[in-house]
Length: 402
Image (cartoon, rainbow, N blue to C red; front, side, top):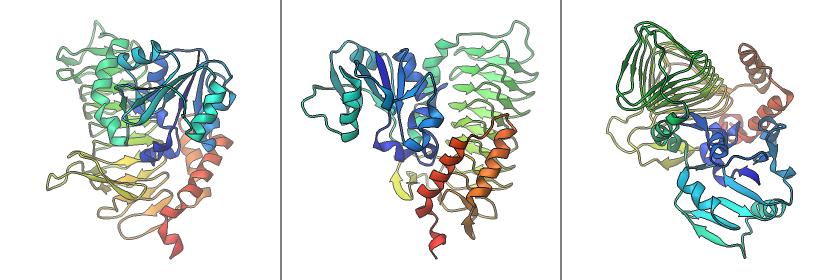
């Protein structure tokens, strides 16, 4: 059966993280949401439905766009669904039907994929059988952090217990530790699995005297700098360089926070560089609920601990301080004394005192240089995506109109 993973209109709730990727490419636990869906619903014919300006970047010969789906039977899965065995059972055992959870269409099992794609785009579900099921979906970026512990714990079985026979580090707890055969953990490191498992994936390196507390996932080829302190639940994506103190956060991948400084209850996109001694607040002084500005509009989180959410290609200077629940857009550059505003627009340059526009051509040139350092060539499609994001976020840059 063909399977189509689709975005609904709530992908905008995850800006700036989803300015440059589909919502189902976000991480919680050890994998992206898309990888979780394909694990529970394996198929040889996966398709994706997302925005036109990022389709080419996230589709290839193995995962095609939904516009190519045939008239055969198909399973449509919402890209905000974090699947489990219960959801799999509900959907797999049913005939053609739409599945809703709290008014959200989480899945659809249909006889004609091409026909349903048109109905999905038109939101025309009249005459189709419907069923309400219990399912977990993410509504905002902090939901990815909230589910991170249970996802790491549940996915540890995919890795299994593995510790080298000869080791010069200290392991604590009985929740499980997996160290890939090609990973390196240096002397003096403490792996504390008392409160959750730890996975150190292929070719990751943990330098000497680090403290890692689960639930924790360290991605492929990532480097944990000497003396780092990482507290779970935390997920570090592939090819990151991490130092200082991290707590309850997710790094999408290819990002650097090499030096001292604190990041807590935060989600960091790709190609981000966190300057030395950058610190973020994740708790208000009055211990009240944190409000986050999504698309520059206040949204109450219902949470006491909320950090920052930083879009791809953004950078902070040394000694930068970031407020509780702050949003930093795509390709933003923050520097200067004091706290910048809680909503930092995309393609901006500056800090508390003043912002100016970070020129598109300069942003693309820097992105190409940064990506080349990781042996990744920036494609024409990627450059076009950056141009689209620049235009899309123009209303955020209010100083351009003064």
